[in-house]
Picture 1 (cartoon, rainbow, N blue to C red):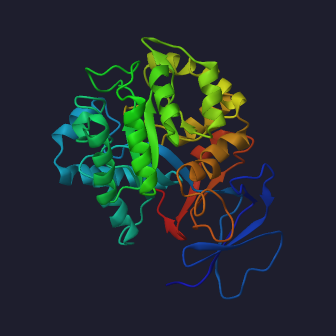
Picture 2: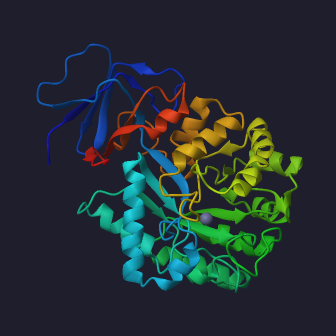
Length: 392
Ligand SMILES: [Zn+2]
């Protein structure tokens, strides 16, 4: 184990505070942050000092919704179906490393096949290779023929849903993902309509909570969102209020989400130069996001990375910028992808902030992202549990 390490930079965003820390000195030991100082202080004599120069240090970002097993190509489902598990695992490893090099030090994988996300999580955790922290859901719980059924997680009725949750926990998942509505990438399902009753979703929540896991529900249409809220899920994915080709936001439902402190991972953010039709649809989500933010809903950084060419595994900075367009301040948008996201993903004690006791997951960017979120694209260094990542 190497000795203590000191990172120096021009500025530090600690994940929470609007005011940047000037001339920070972050002390790291055994993979954890042990001290955060500022000003012209001498570095500890026994420490290896890394001066990163005129950059802003930030806590590593958290993408709360990715699919490492989707290749961000034009036909991600067909590709996944064509891949053997061995090939898929290698693809997931590349996707994870791409995220890490962009400063995304934690990813929540909300849908894999055969628990390959759990396998990859454990591989990185062994320390044999540097990868992001993976919070793995395994195959999403879905109805027969339902959204993402090809991942292998079909369960109908309360009993099978309960068994589904138990099987996932037995297989080592960190979080339960359940498909409350149909989805756009699965033919034969209807994103506007619920897949599960409130009682079925409640069975999932009850069982997951009993086993110490949180539940996040994929939900597009308002009826499915309402079911998820009534069932007491911890987080909602998309929450797009999509009905047919349009959107039907529901003010009271949004207030209910805020009151129950349910986090929303809106899966926004698209890398440039994709088809214009997609961005028009994305634009129509802005006023709804703005309403959710105004109502006090906890919005977090989640992108659905991997599902299309506009969603490469390092797309999160575009998601953060999109949140800022929906009325979050730059600092609030950065917090959504760091401290707020960490808390919502159940890793708030370890991730999302640069504070003593937290994991030494940090990255450095040129410029000041609190003034210009575009700075997030200009990454010069990434550290994962104190180990420096090759960003090239
Ligand atoms: Zn997804």
